[in-house]
Amino acid sequence: METDIATGSGINMEEKIDVEAGENPFEPYLDALKKVLEDQDSIFIIGIIVSLAVVVITFVLLKYSLSRKTVQSAVLLVGLCDSGKTLLFSRLLSGKFRKTQTSITDSSARYKAKNEKGSSWILIDLPGHDSLRPQYVEKFKSAARALVFVVDSAIFQKEVRDVAEFLYFLLTDSAVSRNVPSLIVACNKQDITMAKSAKLIRQQLEKEMNTLRVTRSAALSAQDGSAGASVHLGKKGKDFEFSQLPMKVEFLECSARGNKGEDGEADIASLEKSLAKL
Image (tube, rainbow, N blue to C red):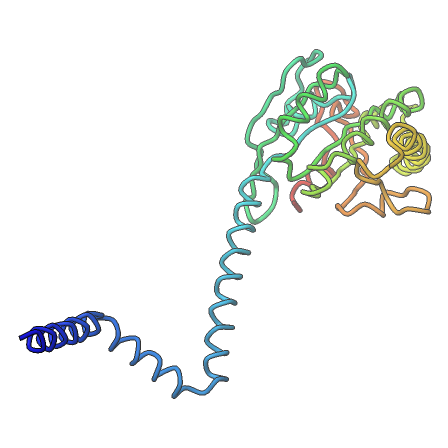
């Protein structure tokens, strides 16, 4: 009797195991997939993997490129107070002369470049006062496709140190260094007899910024023993030149006021030409 019961129990256990083993519905598909992969040439499989990788990488790069173009859609007018940024802003947008005063906030409008593509950018005039500059640069720097640094050519000799310090501040900013917007140094007020040329302004700024680089690096080293906390300007071991920067740099001459004053046209053709190339 005991033998019969044991035998019956053994049969039931075997049947249960057989049922559980046959309950995996995916096993036939997995076996089929395994067989297909085994039948294929390894080179063919590697080719498929490489093709998929190329598609994924292309998609990621395209997305990054499009997002960057979308974000960097602004042209920033920057510079010291009374350099003529606001009048230049008005001339670029409407061609008209208007009396201006020191800006305490930003102004912006869409600017249509004079080119066949019909390109357009957001033109933003930033305040030039030294107490306001940092916060407005911080606000718009990541959107900058180009920096138009406006210089008062008539009194440049008096302001060379201040101009160099502001330019140094911009160019050593981590976001500016990463995004590499074009830099256009607009040597304004060329209608004034004592105005300095773009060539002279470039040369003197290079000397002044080279001095600034040495003093700032020394100050950083004295503070924490390392000068690597900020972006290094230019090439190490060589005197600073604008040609060493990673972005496109151009110095040009212009006059927002123009030779004929309020009733005449501005002399900004060289600036408009540069903006058309962005």
